[in-house]
Image (cartoon, rainbow, N blue to C red; front, side):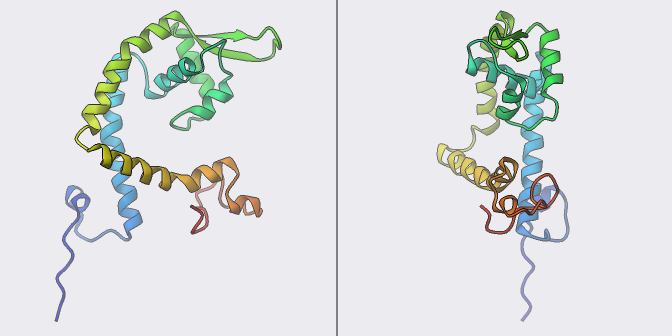
Length: 191
């Protein structure tokens, strides 16, 4: 007796893919990439309207959250939602826009800190509610429970890669350089 072929998944139908995905991991990855494109596009258009990128907005939020006299670029990079190779270039653009400023510390003139200007603070204040509203418009159709589960699963999916980047993954401690800085995955069970 011949079994019926599996019903196409929503992503298969959306992509008009005739054959099943090679693995559940492949389908989940492609689902994540497609979802990111849809969601990120809304935010990109919103921030572009305000002459910002999402990464620049993230920097402004980091600076506001740190308060005080400012934050070194390295620390900003460590706190970014998305990893970017050149935080200095992004900060340069924010300085040119008058949203942040660079300051030297009185204790050590070699250290340069980045701090919000009054204009940067004002822009954050103006954008806070519209950004929260955009979060609600893009994911508000999910229940609080669904959002919590989604966040947990995304954190779990990201965990081995964050461990590799932080140098805490077992493959790095054992001297296997194939895990960090390359396209190789961490060892199975590394999560």
